Length: 237
Ligand SMILES: NC(=O)c1ccc[n+]([C@@H]2O[C@H](COP(=O)([O-])OP(=O)(O)OC[C@H]3O[C@@H](n4cnc5c(N)ncnc54)[C@H](OP(=O)(O)O)[C@@H]3O)[C@@H](O)[C@H]2O)c1
Image 1 (cartoon, rainbow, N blue to C red):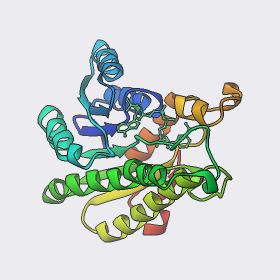
Image 2: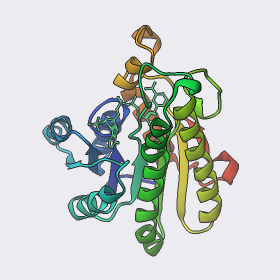
Image 3: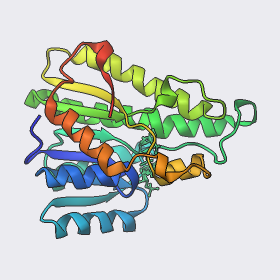
């Protein structure tokens, strides 16, 4: 899909991969609506995009809050136009330092599911109706290798991403032939706050720059190779 003049909603757009995606998609001519809980860092990203001649909007919201989904989407559509591409990027690790499952509160698991799985599901449901009417649209769910590997201490994050991946496969199968697509992308390890929170002693030189990853995700979106069979709906950036 050519993203020029498209309306793109990116959750978690204030830092890390979300900020990088916002910059990349805006440079490619998309209008980007960015969501995060803290509005000030989002405004800085919007100012940075505008200084480069791009179009961006900041929207305060928590994707884990059921009541926030429609107001968030309403603002995004009003500001940037009906959403053509939704990128479910915002995510939580749960409690840090990461803990083994035996020490993990059930409430932490519920919260990780609310932010990483149910929030993206709600947003997808909310945008897909309008996309179906227009016969075109793409949802990109940002996943993780933790969705497929059983790393000790990553339990609730892993389970929430595995569920998101599988929802993506089912959505992709159900959307086949509609002109709409849903994919999940594993961005790999990146030098971001989330990574530093999870593995504080990691050497940042061994981690990808989120801007390079965002460029690869833009290529995947523009390449259209997501028009594939359901089991190929998960891709690596
Ligand atoms: N970094 C890695 O190595 C790595 C590896 C594999 C997968 N990933 C995935 O890549 C994606 C981006 O990760 P990242 O490393 O860039 O994370 P990050 O640096 O921690 O940034 C997270 C972004 O999401 C926002 N956010 C967090 N919780 C939110 C909520 N409940 N509602 C709305 N916005 C929320 C944050 O802003 P506020 O705090 O202001 O809300 C921030 O903008 C995530 O899906 C992550 O799981 C990352």
